[in-house]
Image (tube, rainbow, N blue to C red; front, side, top):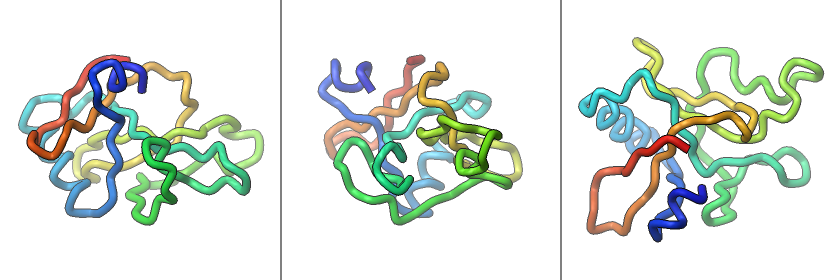
Amino acid sequence: MQYCKLRNMELINIDSAIENDKIGLHIIEKGWAPKKFWTSAVNMVEGGKWIWLSNGQPIKYFNWDRGEPTGMIPFVASYENCIQARHEGTRGFTWNDLNCGVKNYVICKRPSSCSCPSIKSY
């Protein structure tokens, strides 16, 4: 998140299947498919509700990978409070809950005048 803020951008929110597919396609076209990316999603609020940290809004669209999220399963994945997006072959651009301290790439959102995300290791 700090990487994006230093560049006057913010971590990406993915609000629809169409947006998720567009980002996934862009990642494939750029050859970034094996990489994993942070979104601004967190569930560190009361009740375990997922929100977009960049704007505080509840998340209404999810594209969980098979078997996800696992952070709600006792003793399996405590502290999985952030969402990582990744392209997993035939499953497409799917989401995984993960410990927020894991090193991943980020997708930063620029002002609407730019249509492509900026990606950097974080």
